[in-house]
Length: 216
Ligand SMILES: Cc1cc2nc3c(=O)[nH]c(=O)nc-3n(C[C@H](O)[C@H](O)[C@H](O)COP(=O)(O)O)c2cc1C
Image (cartoon, rainbow, N blue to C red; front, top):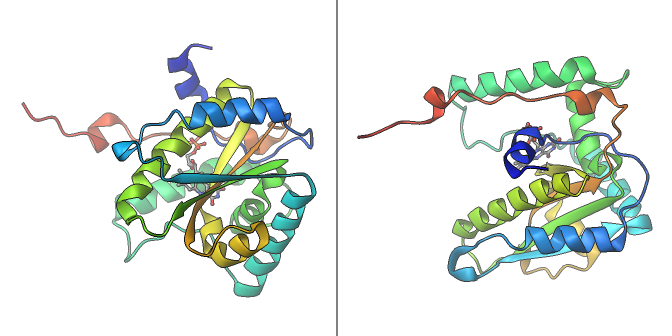
C-alpha cells in the first residue's frame, strides 16, 4: 500500500480476532517501529511484548486494579482544558458511541477495553529508564507513531493505550520490568475484527487552519 494512503487510512482498532500474531510478523513490526529516530540516537525505549497466557493474566490484573481503584481514561490535564480540546473529546465520543457493543457506557467500554487491550492477542508495553527526563517521552511518541503505521502496513490493527500508566508498579511487578523503569504506554496489537462496528469508527481531524499558523 502507498505510504500516504497508509497514513490516511490508519485508525485505532478496538475489537480484535483471537488469532495470534506469528513471531516473525511481530519481529517485522518491531524492526520497523525501532527504525524511529530519537534524540542523539539514544533509543530510550524498551519494549516488552506480551502474548498468550501472560497477556491474559496481565489483562485480568489491570481490569481488577482499574475496578478496585476506580481508574478512568482521561486527557491527563493539569487543569481544565480550553474549550477547543473539550469539544474534540466530545466529537470522539459522538463517533464512537453509536458503535459501542450493546451493554455499557462509553467510559466503561474504554476503561475496561483499554485494560484488556481490547482483546488483542498481543500487548506491547513500552517503558523507559527513569534516569531520562520527560523530554525523552517525545522519542517514545515517535516510536509509537512508527509502530501503529507499521502495524497497519503489515495488515495488523493497533491501539495505543495510555491508560495503563496508572498501573505502572503493577505492570512492572507482573512482567519483571525493573523498578527503575517507567511504563510510558502500551499498544494493543492483533488482527482487527472487521465485522465489529466499533472498528468502523473514524475520528476526524481539525482542519489545518485550526492547528497551523503560517508566518512569512
Ligand atoms: C498517547 C496515546 C494514548 C492513548 N490512550 C488510549 C487509551 O488508553 N485507550 C484507548 O481506547 N485509546 C487510546 N488512544 C487512542 C486515541 O483515542 C486515538 O488515537 C484517537 O482518538 C484518534 O483516533 P485514531 O487512532 O482512530 O485515529 C491513545 C492514543 C495515543 C496517541
